[in-house]
Amino acid sequence: MPFVVPYIHRWRTLWLNSRGFDISKYINEPAPMLRRLRITEASFTSDIVAFGGVTSVDLAHVTIAADLCFLKNLKELRLSRITYKFGDATVNKLGDILNACPEL
Image (cartoon, rainbow, N blue to C red; front, top):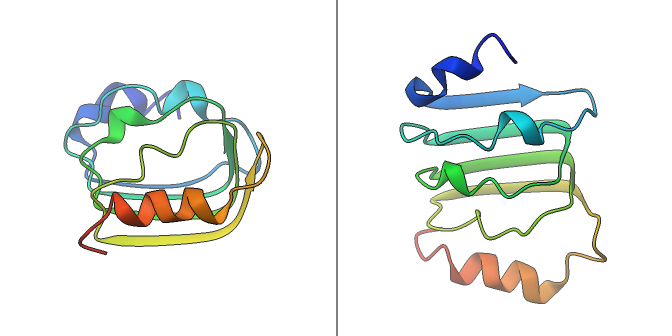
């Protein structure tokens, strides 16, 4: 990851399998061109608000210790086997995500 982070401003798609490592320090820089985000087998402890232009998100086997507020204005969303470190990801949180994504 350290080799590609300097080019984050040019990313349009990010597919990342981190094999369980925390990717927080790599995903907190602005990525204004990013539209598609797919993260598998990872954990992150910081908000990824810097990815605000993303319209397609696929999170699988991910541990989240952050707010899910970055999941907004999406056109595609796939969540699979998500672990939320601050308690359960309740139906209310899922409802908030769906409300923040009217084009889903």
